[in-house]
Length: 417
Image: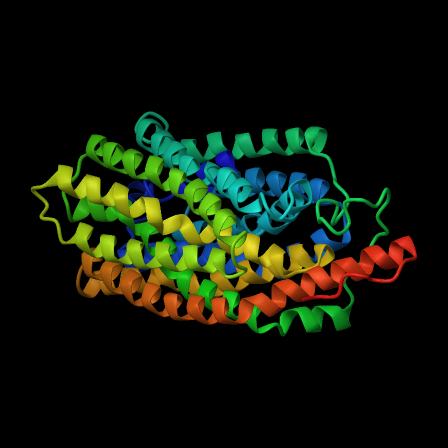
């Protein structure tokens, strides 16, 4: 995750030299960002299906190989149309995370997943920081193409490491109801079960909040470096210092949000969603304050940006944990893939839309308007999901008890409360 995120996100700090190479404006560069997001969205359902049918560790190794190969193709692209196509192809492996999260759910039980997902996702902002360091330190001596060669090669190395070192756990092994069984019978998601799972009101609420909630992430990820350089007049050193501080607190936010979600979940099934809602509200308010800081007050701007970054990722580990809280083990890759598919489908247009607004107004207006409006709607869907969540959690626990009783040849003596 660390190295893949570095590769995926370093295009942000490389935006300016890429635009100069091909003579692009913000709208054309926004199309490059959107192309990769669209490709990822199209492949999420396929990856989810494959992960729920076949060995997840082997598929993760294949995804890492695709990461390396498609990044090399992007570096070789001679023209803007070919770069647009090759950069879009990098989205194929970006859709491979559902299998990784499904593996984690079978390594750690429900009471720990929020913290573990948060700890794992620390790799994402540090990958962003690593990508920034690579981009800003290597783009002059190697050029942006040379930076892509470096990270593409790392993808091929990671593919080999995953193939050799990552083991495949039994699906559902960490569920409390199944932990006492010496051997778990294999279960496969059939069409009838899939339909029932996907009709859950709580799951539909998570999909809806993800559709809207990913807009701010993509706007900030792809345009914030350009905003600091072009509209706040920051040098490369100032950009790196500002973003490094924000990334450290962002990384902490994943773990803090996940840990708070575990703590709240032990007290109420709605606990993880309350943590999501708090992070959304605080992140939105603090971003508005941050962008209102004048350009001649960089220390205040940097401090508020870092504080904002602490709360923005609260939802991520808690949404993943909630998906596992209401979904059967054999369906988790598919459900997580659909969640990501919905998120990418909703947010694929966000970089392009921000670019179009920036051409007509400014990146400041684009970032502020898209982020605040998206978070407001997202909070409403989080409230709806919290309302519908307890019956879904109880239903999953009942299904797992019935499964354990059936595999032991015993009646279910613990009906759902």
